[in-house]
Length: 602
Ligand code: M6R
Image (cartoon, rainbow, N blue to C red; front, side):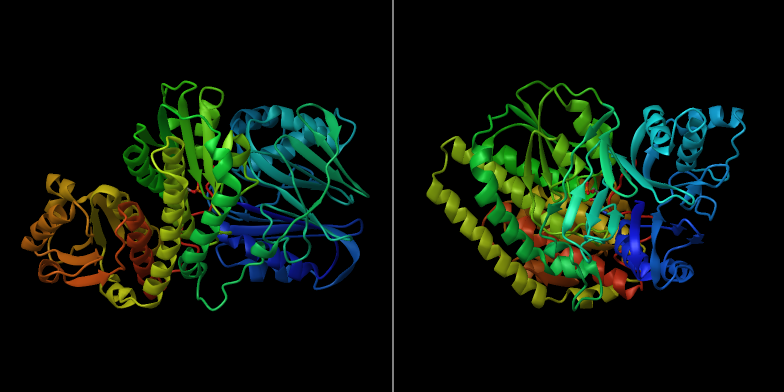
């Protein structure tokens, strides 16, 4: 989604803005722009299209001795098509109030109609421009721009993070609700951003603005709660930004780097759980019923969680798409637990589902970003420690999420006294051994070769059973989002009820067939596909004559006997397959078309 980067200070403005915007590229964007404000001069430019940041920043000075304010933005189109007019920054009629914004102003059409009646002229189709005009209108009655912004905030509905400046004034104002806004200070210069990553290069003094907070920076910075109309005190924290200093290292893309980071992510998540979460989780009451929610890959992790929780602790679980749950009338009470899963902690639908059920049942979140909105709205958080995930495709966050769901189940099993601490520790040690198996597989596999065979295909089917059915869904999602090949995941036996009609020699069918109690059933499903000349790629942890006979290609993964640990291994080849197919097709895997890393609109 949109990215905001702002700067107030002196120095290599071109380099700073370029670094800021490029670091936010991963969020997804289709146009970019900036406004440079100074008492004596202003500069402004916009570019349409992906990959235009280098070109855009050429209009900025390389070095500047006077203090300047720069607001810059990467836009991921929501309101209005991709065009220069719709790119940010946006202005009021007099082109004096300048704004960059991330989020959605839900009542913008109503406000726009009213402002049009008051003779405001709009250039774009965006919701953001309405805010600039609303502030302009409020300035007719409010004493200064700060009060005019506060009045405007009381009129708008929706989610937002924005930065505002006024032409020729040494002033920057920013506010947020539901979406992140981070401020960094290096002793001289201020940096503002949608996440800490672009700031990490300059300072570790960071402040996270909270919901309903607004700041005003001229000669000094002041903070207020705009809902309560009170000034508040906020301090910059010195935080360890090591993990935010991210590069691709030896890899071509973040996606493949993050796939390879999974052993480390699992280890860190496990350690953090044991050190920081386990004891606190034990004190939480035992729910009678659990609803798991999330979107995309996080929803798939939820399906695996359902399987684990129901089987391990025998508590009924339902898994709901967050976008559906938020508009349903779920029957919940104080004995119901909602578990919301999200890598980013900012996904609008997941946040919407949490808000819907807040106060009606207990809310836990499984999240990768500690200071995110979802964490703040939850009663209890189980953090994943996968580290920042830059590639649009979720990879390491998925395996960390399923690890947390497994640890959650084991903790409650321990609480129910069905296992002792020794058994719990043994399982944790087993988990550590899986990381070695994943590393081994990552460095010894035939997936890249098999990927060659898929690059000209237009469709693919992913089939699995039991705990590996959600892995089939996840494999299909990975392939479609990064390689643009249409793919569907199904429970293997369900194929007979429709999808089987699609099978012929052009249809690759990826089977997850591991040694478990459903293995023989999967082999029968493979037989059904082979009979119809389907092209079978088997992901298996054993080789048998049957498997050899039925498969066109075999991806052999390490065997693990614990059924709950199998998904940690079965998903890896599917992630690699998508990466290699997309890479061979020349697609930018980290920023596939139309997608954004954190989906902060409904
Ligand atoms: O940040 P979240 O986990 O809440 O994001 C949810 C989905 O948007 C996300 O998993 C999406 O489906 C990914 N692109 C999948 O790779």
